[in-house]
Image (cartoon, rainbow, N blue to C red; front, side, top):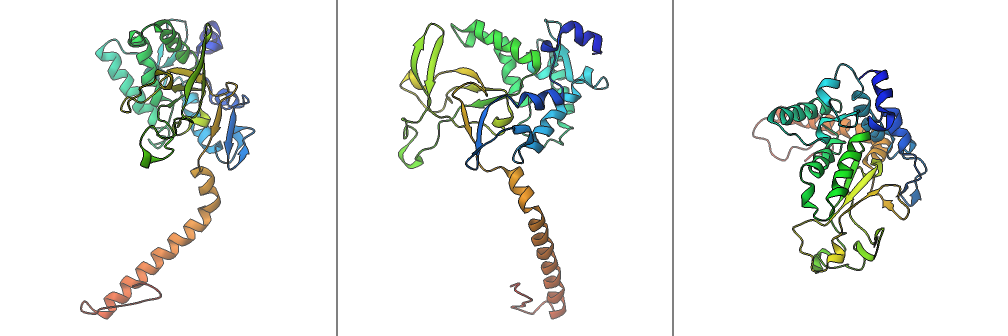
Length: 285
């Protein structure tokens, strides 16, 4: 899509560019890791490389050479990734498959929590809005909103495993639950386990996973919340990106030494002959 078409559609109806995505993360969201609050996700050493890998697919959505494979027009004058729209024909379903295959080439299939992993779910909000009986209009509204900027969505469906030995209901006092309902909506309090990459997303779909029975409906709300909504806090586990940055040189040294020792051991074993037992060489057994 050329720039004049982008202008006619309005920037609010087309996907982020990579730079716009990175800037969108600096929205006062409350993210904590290693006991400290993160000031800017896109620049923090625990997140910045992953953030830039997510930015790349956004840029590709604007690449004229790949646009026809990756994107589809919307009813609102813009375009979005094909996976964010519910296919209505076999041809559209195959085109969605091809779009995912093309997108995954960018990261060699190594970004398991890329934008498309919730994109297919968001498509169901339009195709099967009736599933959310009584809130069909909300489902359709999010179906449209998700497409307009190709927002990056996250999910939170599991309760914190407070004590696995006491069963699924252990720790109900910390599980997310409805505390009050009002005309404008409902209020929730508590914790939920979020998916990998949540600190880099724009919105979180919260619900209760079906395989764990819930007797009290207060513990099974279904809603979508912005990552930077007031009161939302993300407490992160160890960052592999940050950990690898700190230990990369050490790991290479250990691996090199290990392979060197193994080769020397194999050489010594061959010299000792096939019947030798208990061959040792510099700590190898």
